Length: 205
Image (cartoon, rainbow, N blue to C red):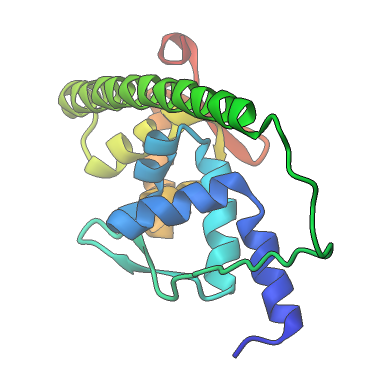
């Protein structure tokens, strides 16, 4: 049984819409960071922050695949029950209740239709993203000597990232990541700007 402090902490976590979306996605299947980022159209940085928070609260955990990418999954699911108690003994009957109901139903229909359109658009975007990643892997193998370099380039195509964020996103060990970053800089594909790395030159267009 959770105490009131733990309950308040869980409610704070669920108060964020994107964290709720991540939980719903992980209820379907385990996912790695880039997959969550692509499916929910969130930046990898934001996804990592949300995952780390929920991992600390033991809502999520992860396992490593053969490429040492972290696959996150739900370890302790959350079910919230809300009971509303009417304070007044009785309320006046609303003569316009039928009108309000019809308006609410019509609004719900419009919202559901809008959600379906967004869902279809998201499916199309996910398909386009998968195609682009496959093309990057194909062309990358002609220009890059290691799979680690391709993983790093794909990660940096999402946004500028620090070495810690790249390690979290790709699952690469420090040594492999450092050598991969060095080779990509030698090829003028990426550049370091302070603590972050980004694509450069024609690759950043």
